[in-house]
Amino acid sequence: MAETYSIGELARLSGSPVKTIRFYADEGLLPPSGRTPAGHRRFDETDLARLQLIRSLRELGVDLPTIKAALAGHAQLGELLGAHIRTVETRIRGLQRQLAVLRAAGDSPSPATVRRVQALARLDADERRALFDRFWDRVSGDSPSEGAARLRRLGTVDLPDDATPEQLDAWIELAELVANEDFQETTRRNAEWLPNAAKDGLDTALLQSGMEQAVKIARPMVAKDLEPDATGADAAAQALVGAYAAALGREPDRAFARWLLKMHDRHTDPRAAHYWELVGIITNRVPTPEQRREIGTYPWLIEALRALVARTP
Image (cartoon, rainbow, N blue to C red; front, side, top):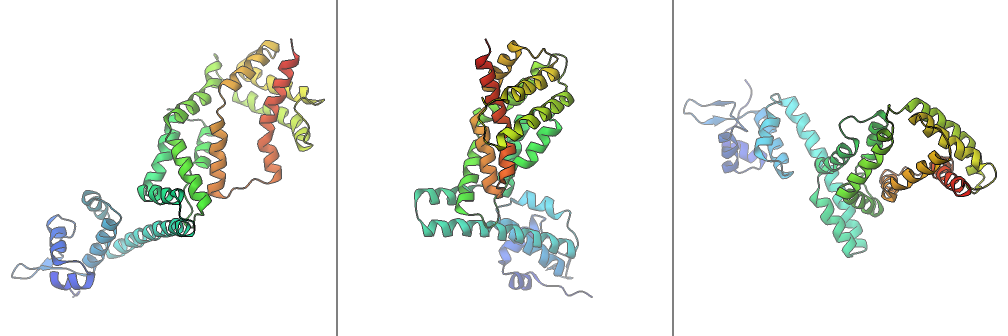
């Protein structure tokens, strides 16, 4: 027969006060495994694991109804221990992150380091994730495309367990950016202008193939650090115009080129580029020279288009 404990013995083994254990039992979080003939509660090893898990969750600030719902799915000792392990791991990651911030604050005490501590203490992992979920939900709308889903995956980041002060600062700035309602709305509008301009539907296949051609022409010039108004840049700009015109069912004439440049300027927010810079700092995704050239190709094409339009009456 499995060993059982009185409420006093359970308190001694767990380090929890008898009053607290009795409260958890009365609330249904810790129902006793049995009772003595005299009606006294008896608890077993599974109850001890359950109590330890409750304590860990409470220390993380989880409310009692949430704990009760979580425990409903963990009836066996092994399941309770597994849930407890995951809870403790979460606590350790949070403490490691706080330790990194506190060390930075101790090395160079300043208002900035105090701000890091406050910002980190204010948000747990779920809340940090929710910030990005709200941002991308608003930006993507009701029917996100495959491209938007990919951007969402790449652009949803969290702090490393051993975050550096630079990464902490970048994350705080990024969190403020995604919470900015003006940036949310601007990003949504910027994502919608092209589909909205296509009266008969946007032909994404034509756009992609045309863009690939424009990039193919531009890439060697970007690699040589040639200016967007250099000889040969017009061909790349015209390929860019042709890609958008084909996708929208328009003629790639001078009027369309001017319109395309106007729409690009109207729907480009420099904060978006900064968003990805911050993501790169947090994730340590430092682009290689080749990747930098790839990243810089589209802005180069836009400047080549600008030069083309400026020369076109």
